[in-house]
Image (cartoon, rainbow, N blue to C red; front, side, top):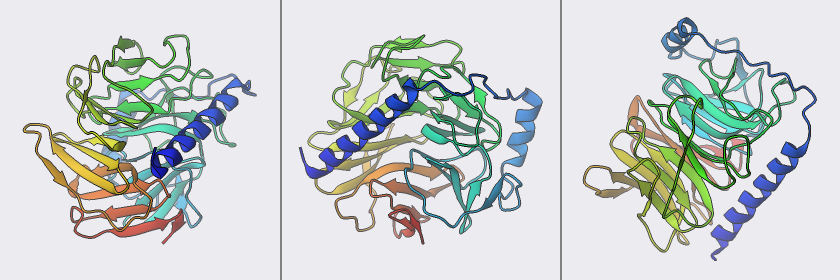
Length: 332
């Protein structure tokens, strides 16, 4: 086991143990204070998400340290990366850092979609959500959260959601009212129904799951043995890489973006049609690798990633050059 794999495994076990300890505690308030968004509200939100967040009354300037990041994505039509941290959402928009004023929850299993985001995790100190929060969806940047189930039951760390199709692919760390422990499930209807999938071929400790934005059959996973791809909705997985640890998987319509570590980090785009692969040059990184990454859906040359050492980088020219947005969590 190389040093990086050991470090990542310790990190995963620490997060899991912490979460399980929190889940055993009874929440002070069992009433779920979530709000279900109607179709008219969703349409209004979709129309307004492209507006700048600088003057939005739910956001304020952020100048602190960003750490314990558990997800990254371009939420809705915003064309700005959202970072799911232990103390709420942070956003980097046109050179300005912002944070949410309320609902500063500890988001885990965070996934951006074309109309908002899905997430699990734990409530923040200012929230009346149950602990853990189960699976929540928001279409207004997190101002209101719609429950999709598992409140006060599960904190999903391993969860992927399709950007456009919104299919959920998840694994529960323990038995709950719907799922068996360490088994894999998919839902095509916002969590109303779940189907267990065999996930044959998946082995070892996993660190990330992903769902294709439009094709429900195409799923991916990253783990200690490498990168896995499924073309039958998770019934079986093929190991695409050998001799390296997979660190991240992320889909666009035509490709799979994945990260690896074998003593040195790598970042690869795999064409889903012909399986051709293209390496993306990374900035200089020492004993570090890509942990979360996302591509701007409005600009395929813009890629943002978070490293295991809590550095944040962004390129607008497909990796020809990188700007560092945070170093060890300290904003630059």
